[in-house]
Image (cartoon, rainbow, N blue to C red; front, top):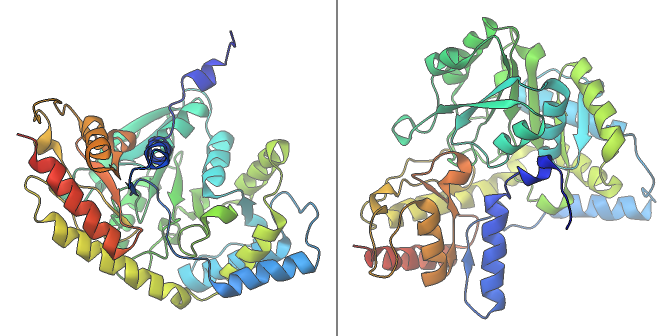
Length: 397
């Protein structure tokens, strides 16, 4: 019998990947499955980025790169942050990683000591709490309900901070809720961090370009706390480059050096071709992605309208990303005569098995009364998916 480490035995499988795996299994059995469980744009990578990648292959960019990424890419990221976000970082403050997920993990491993507290607003992205545990930290959750558009207040944050707090991690636009913090809301949170200089802020901005409101706002814009903010971003969502696996962080030079040191011991740099493609993406103006943004907004509005026809489902109006996170707790305790729905996991499995639509239970995001619905697919499939869900739910009494 294989004896595995406590570290891996205590880790929970990603619910989003688990639901996607189950949907593939049903599809392999011949079922017509609509998979709305993964956070992946259904668009293709822009042609200019693909051409840059092809060119880099012809020019033999096939050797090891610096651990923190090509200097040209890091400079392009620094210029993008200045151009689009009014953030002043130098190239040596940028570290390129194998996706934004690795950039977050690098940061936590370099900041968190065993027992340090990391504050996570709920709902949260599925991996945050597991990453904190892997870094031997203690996660402290702040609940943000649908009545507050799934956003915490400055007072909630202040109440959660203790002398043991080392970091705060959040995403805006948010996965799974699509909620976006306004400049005034971020300013209020920054005011709390000003009074607590021992706390670092990990700002996950991977959905920056999928924002239906005004320009994206970063908490790093507040100079009083900028030295303690680690900006996380990448090309996966905004440029439809999930498979390219290129993300980055921008941070104080000490953190940049530490994460480079760490990364050098277990993955080194990410793919050289992916980096050259990302360089082209960084040099591409945001307006090049507006067509994709408009399509996502159209789909959001479509799904929200369709969900109004389903009794007992409560939704907010997401201002970014490509998810809807409805409260479905009114169905808990109901039954179709064969199965009783006790929680969101039961409901998601019931919908998957009965009408073959894959969703993710809210437990995975720290909010058990909700489910995550990704609308990163065609209008036709979204209409069919909601139709199937409505039919399945109508059988529950």
